[in-house]
Length: 162
Image (cartoon, rainbow, N blue to C red; front, side, top):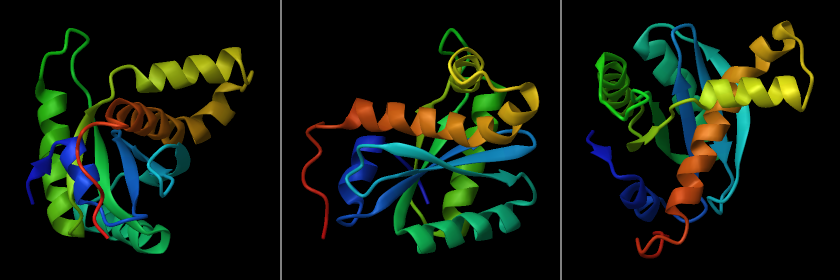
C-alpha cells in the first residue's frame, strides 16, 4: 500500500473512523487514538516492538476494536529537517505495516515528541523516571498525532466518505 499525504488520508476515511498514531521506537511502539471527529488524540498503549507480523496483528486488532481506518506513523526527521537513515527505516516500516494491516498510512514529523512529553511529565506532572517510562511512548504518539490532526484540520480536503 502506498503512503498517503495526511490530508488525502483524512478525506479517504469512512465517516466516524478514527486514526491510530504510532511512534515506532526501538523497543516500544507508542500507540495513540483519535476521536471520531479527528480533533483529539489520546494515548492508548505501548506495544513491545517485535516482528512485523506480530505487531501488525496487534495494530489491526486495535483498529477493528476501536473503529480506526488509517495509521499516522511518526517520521523521525533530523533536527534540520533532513531525511536520514532513521526516517528511511520508519518509512519502510510504515509501508510494510500498511500492507500487513490493510490500513492506509501517512507519515508525520515527530521530531522532539518524546523529549517534549518527558519535559511535560517532569515539570507539570512531577512523574518519576519509572512512571514516565511506562507512559512516555503512548503519550509521544498522542503528541505526534495531535500535531498532525491540528495541522490538517479544516484543510480543503473535501468531505469524508460515508
